Image 1: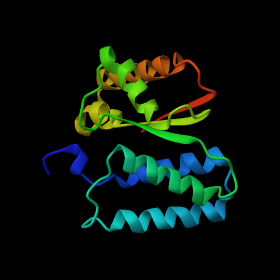
Image 2 (image 1 turned 90 degrees about the vertical axis):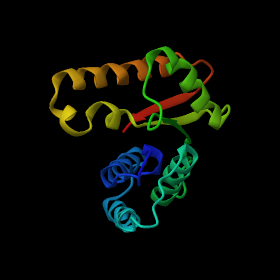
Image 3 (image 1 turned 120 degrees about the vertical axis):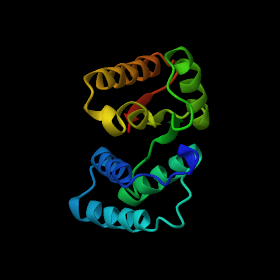
Image 4 (image 1 turned 30 degrees about the vertical axis):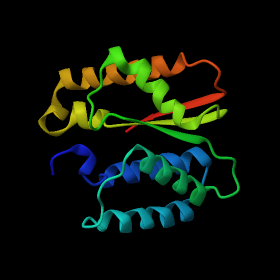
Length: 160
């Protein structure tokens, strides 16, 4: 495969997202296991998985939230996708604003940042203290810029 966007979503990322969303909405353990089983079936169908774009990831996360908490008021989901473009602090504020533009003026937003772990911690770099420090700095940068966004009620940042 030639691009990161064409690669199927990684199984660990889907399970981590499911676990994070389940704990966010306070879902009971049996339902978490059921949803996790559905996610695993989706993951195993690797021949049809073309990978999801940012909107597809947002739709999948929203669907998981609806499964986990059908009666709850759910946050709007925005995706900041760094799978194709490397993270650059200079452009981070603009990219965060663009990602948040996906949800308009929603008062409760979940900003899901994808691609940073792959960029900084993939393969042998995962053991490098320098790569881990660079990753931590990138996450701090995203959190700092997201905290500066004005006019929002609640903004939850999740980096996977």
